[in-house]
Image 1 (cartoon, rainbow, N blue to C red):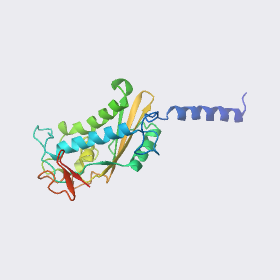
Image 2 (cartoon, helix red, strand yellow):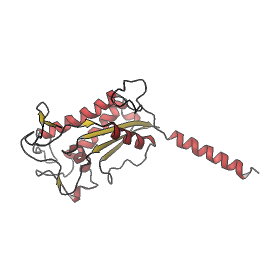
Image 3 (spheres, rainbow, N blue to C red):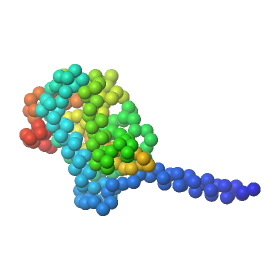
Image 4 (cartoon, helix red, strand yellow):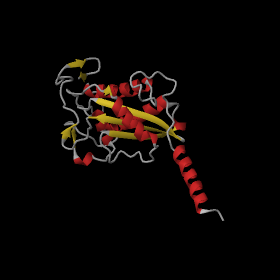
Amino acid sequence: MPSLQYLLVITATFLALEVRSEEAEWPGEGSPNTNCPQNTQMNDSLRENYTNMHNYRRGQLAQGLVAKVSGHLLPPAKNMIKLKWDCNLEKDAIDKVRGCPKDVSNEKLKGELRHRVPVKDVQNYEDGIRNAVHNWWRVVRFNDGIGMKAMFRAKHVGQPIATFTQMAWAETTNLGCAIGKCSSDYVIICRYNPAGNEIERLVYDPGDTCNSCVHSCDKENGLCIV
């Protein structure tokens, strides 16, 4: 009969292998990484993709070009800020992706969005990012939303619309995301600061585009520069 010590060693070995198999594979190796060189798991191309995809959609909303579930357009925003990349938020996202979380529900999260997509359904890491951002934003067309007053209410907490409102939160200034390959899935996590989805607060201030920008406006996309 095997000794207890032998069984403990075997059990620990299997557990270590199981944990190792659940660590994410990263896209960063072999690609330019000058913006956040301390975070080797990501690269500049993916950072640019994340940032541009967010700011494009925020710009569309700021200019009054986003339709809600009724088909009518949401009002434009006069205070929508252009997001900047944040290496610390990226590091937070990397740490969360690293363990390949099975739970990617956004119901109880604040200042963070999660998504999981099968590798077979997308072409590469870049396509996985597009899939995540598209799914977080598209809910505005299929779910009861924030209305013409653009107010986030208690009834929105934990609902699908909350991924849209987090992406669209006008006062958010910084973004950091990560993507990793976990077995047969890509796991995508984005972190936002300041966090959005504050109950009984405006997602954005409806009005003439850029009318409340404190410093300047990027007139090409209607976003405030801070």
